[in-house]
Length: 201
Image 1 (spheres, helix red, strand yellow):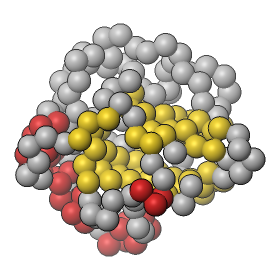
Image 2: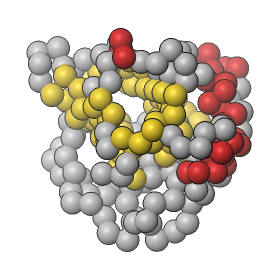
Image 3: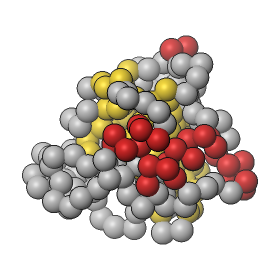
Image 4: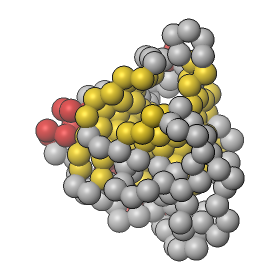
């Protein structure tokens, strides 16, 4: 599996299906706040966590934008309602990812935690309404193997977000490992929670 960060809450995930075919999954391509949007993007599966139309999309991907359970090729997706947004659990290659979109509550209730189960990779907003302390608290609740921060200030934005370094400071991290993209397999997951910063593609 390969994960690339496209800014704010947008990620592109590549995986191999059962027949060896590459499957591309695109999450939240919302680029209205970008000074310069990326070139049109294509994918096999498109996940939208908010009730608005995605921009810069080409082709006709399988669209998921509401709660429910879905299976496409060898990718299993569960959408869980959370106020105005939808949280997504994504299972592929025996790894479970969770995309929290713009989740703003500072604590997950027991019902939601039970629905989420064990999370290997958590994509969490750190520069929005949740704030660095709230984000750190949710990380401690979920205890994922890997944390990927999102929704923080980057140079290409018209509007301001909180700074990534403030989230890292709350966790006591001076400098997190930065990668252009994350290539990961089940057997390579760390034993303890690790924060990885993906550079905007």
